[in-house]
Image 1: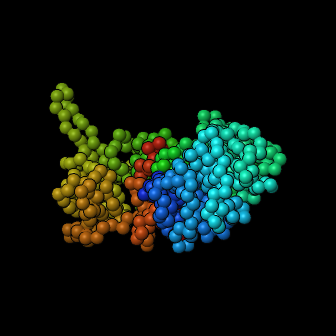
Image 2 (image 1 turned 60 degrees about the horizontal axis):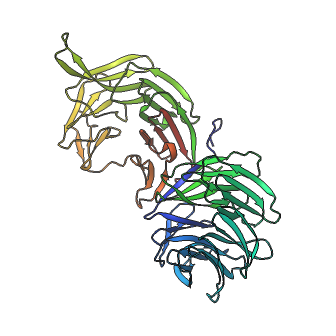
Image 3 (image 1 turned 180 degrees about the vertical axis):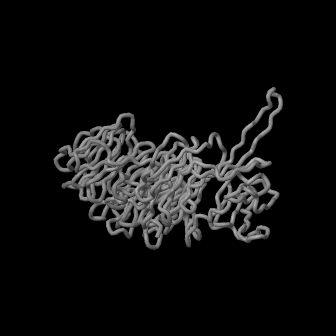
Length: 551
């Protein structure tokens, strides 16, 4: 962590995109199993998020998963009415249990691994012998059974949830005690505690005595699924689009963390470690959240009044530079996140801008276009102008008129030139005089804000083709056209995808990191493999430091 700055106590370190909506999640050590609406079960590496296997065999959506204690086998319940026992190593089906007449909502494994309990939309709870595959007990209920599990308290019993009631049964099908309100229930790993969700209330109780350990209330939130961390100190509960985490060893009634970032309903939660929460969502993704042990440390978020129009990362100088719509240029210390300096420029209502620290000079360039009328107000023309400004001295270095409207503007990597992109050309202007030092023309219309600059090489993104590039570094000669596509925002193997706010493995295409929540869509972003700096229309500047998440 960076000292002296407050940080969020958790962040999303991985987002795994899936080809179908995930419905259920189960974890065993560093293995995550995710069931999909189509019936497949995907296993993921809990550290990297990499897909390790696909278990195929169900013909309907798989709604529930449970690992055996040694992690070698997995039990699943499906809309095809069957329960399957899988060999996780081979991906093969070991056994199939048939008997339910409708969807299987929930499955659970007894502590001695001899029995499977299942709950179904056919309004029954069934108890199965794993060895013989026989069903030796059927418990009929008045409504579909949405959850079933084995109680860890002796004597052995079953707990089921149906009709927003929690029921307890003996293993031969007799009701043990009256039902009570509850829409979801989960036990801690050691069986000593239980969390019960009902409407807007979360209650944590001792399993043996029923004594209340903690009680939480969230107004206006339909609480759905709950789970314990492996050490029993944290609970997580989902509502429609967020996950809430409480430290039940603390007296603070407020969540220690609220996770936002999914674009749709959270379907299930599970802890894979005391500090790692897994969430699946109808947005076809699984997110791995770090709690109290950030893998990408947010140095700070700084909010000012005007939206960020451009952002520049200069890690060698220890700063980031933001240009805002009110004409103010700010420099930020990337180690502390504090604003080091701010300068007002005469820029107002400009279109494109860039800034860079060049030989201890903070240089700002911007393109400005205004409509000028004659004295009678009948005739008017557009005045198009590029300004080069020393922000600290508050002086103009150079300016030049242009014939065409610019669609992007960038400073070269060495600070000697300003690249200006027009509809069919790129001009390189002298930083000192504003004179044209080189020009190339092309036929395709570029996308706005599409200039990619690496030193004195520049590329333009065209909506209909691969980037076109030129090297403006040769003195006294025309720019040389480049054949290779730029490796912008790359280290040896990773690329920053600006459009989707994520970092991907260049070879496999796997998403390594993705911005989420209110930071999902930056207006501008730059990444050098260690620092990620982004600006937002809200005026916020976000600096992320990657210490080991991308190794």
